[in-house]
Length: 254
Image 1 (spheres, rainbow, N blue to C red):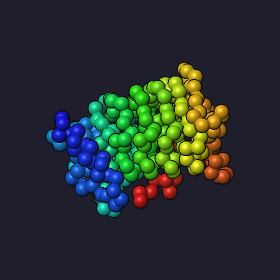
Image 2: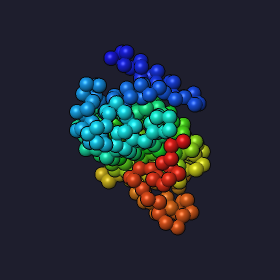
Image 3: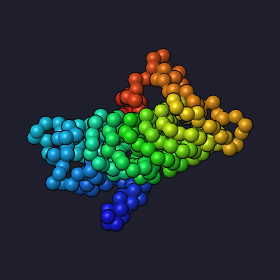
């Protein structure tokens, strides 16, 4: 257990230097941990999760799993899953090269989400209806993150909008159990179009640390795609896949 924890933190720390590309073998190990399967159990686990493209797919070729996109160098850059799974995996093992994560109804994770353990390359992250719970710290998000959708989970406690990534554009916490949002207006990213905290069963309290009024971009409203279109000066709403933009530009692995 100690060895596994040390290896995981080594991956996180190693992901920060520019141009870092983790070896494929290590990437495969990360994906095994993500779905909660050892090598011997992997074929059966992937069949239950319906991640194999066909019966002849090599379970160790993670780039051939359903919903996984890789670069020309064979490194994972995008994972998009819609899996009603009962497997016990760990979201903290998403490979460090992953830029786009879009999970819906994929209940792999059983513990609190540590944002410090998310991939440092992450740009778009949607974990919708994934059964996530507990407190979540937005002060330790990946520095390149632009879109974060954690709607329809069971997060509790306070959310701090005091040290967001500089390029953050949108945050969605619809239908959680958030009770308080702490805001520092002067520290909100300039490109932020909206941070949405609509809760159906409780009223969220907002506290501003540096002004009498909360910045208008922090809202109790429900996020709607047409709102995003207006923010971007578009005539038509941007098509959403629950989480981040699904346009060609947003999903391209760079």
